[in-house]
Length: 163
Image 1 (tube, rainbow, N blue to C red):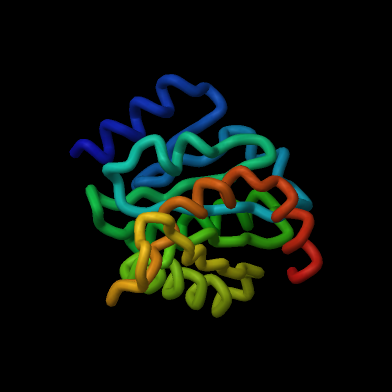
Image 2: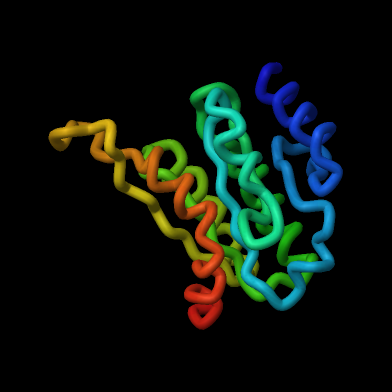
């Protein structure tokens, strides 16, 4: 419930965002402005707000898919976000994913399903993390680097040529 409340709250505070009906997806309300551009989608488990939804906007993320607290988002919701930006005529979609097993799995499955529908989508996995001084069994999860990547506008230009 707190994941839903968090999304409703951030949408209420920002008229430039909307919820994707039936999903835990916060998305730009001006989707007509992404036509011909690469859409950037990220997300992950709730509990770090506004770690993802706080970075939606012009020159940053197009949409965020939220999962329950500390749990990866559902594949169906990720796929719904991808389909929505495709319908808005984005030339492609880049999924920005943290190096967390559940996120890699669920975003990866959504990517495969979207590609099977002939939707142009790629995924980048962010694997840095300053929290680990030495390599651990789980590896670096990308918690720090992902926030920086969310804000890097140039990434749209870099990946446009790959779609």
